[in-house]
Image (cartoon, rainbow, N blue to C red; front, side):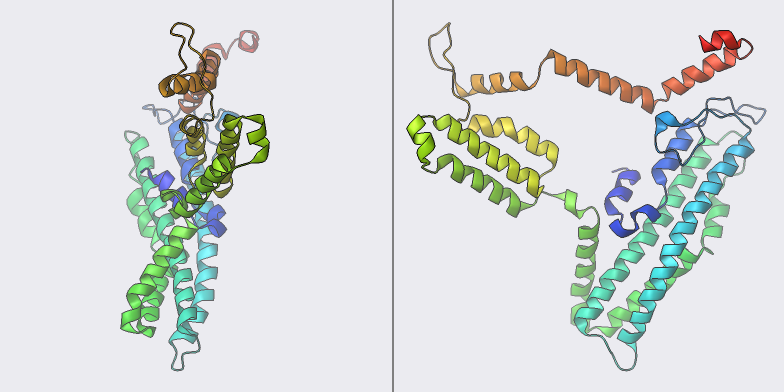
Length: 348
């Protein structure tokens, strides 16, 4: 799994806005053109780190020094936010750790466990940010290879060791050891497991696997509605309509509970419709017989996907490819380079 996805899944919700803007830095590096021997860049680079949309980023030309300044100014800004959260949380937790590990333990084992879980979240926050800085600097050095500049990773990582959040990280590791010593030895494995569970609940654990209980309850509710003796459907002699209602109930339950991802719920609809018999078979004119299950499935899927939908999806994919490869920016930069001495033609 790519680190950008890992960072997104493991981010602690309450501090999500304070993480290193890893994806923003990646977008910047993708917009950097190949450096010329003179040390200057062509105007194909978009250098706005804080731009919320790639399509809105302006074209900007300038020497490498300006690019480097923008990159590290943004990095300093992100590190400032990381430091603020780390220092505030470390000081707050440290006060509670003193109460838990002092001569007279003033916190119960349950309170110590809750404090340990809170500390685990903070350690995860600082560790992920340190990894993000290291990885984005590696990408920076790789993209700038051949420009004559020294690699920035060693010097920045040395500076990172003196940053407040790195100091807090070492303090947090020490506090974790103290809290484990404050607990009975047989309780320490359970304490670590609680911390891991807390991180999963706060971060990406929610997407790692389906939630079995809501999944079973949603399908069971749909099955009950589909098979229950409902007078309205019995009088109308429309069992397919009742089964369709059961599929609707199951689908709504899956959507509301988020037992499985939304796309999986959408893909389940035709499967449930065919498997439950909610779609009545039609008479095949050639043979004079009723449709079989494979024919019904083909008809249902054909009604959900046709040439028009394929055209729309293809257009969206093509637009995404253009945006991803920065084709519109490259084309605009090429036109600007060729027609910069002829403004009327450039406007046309």
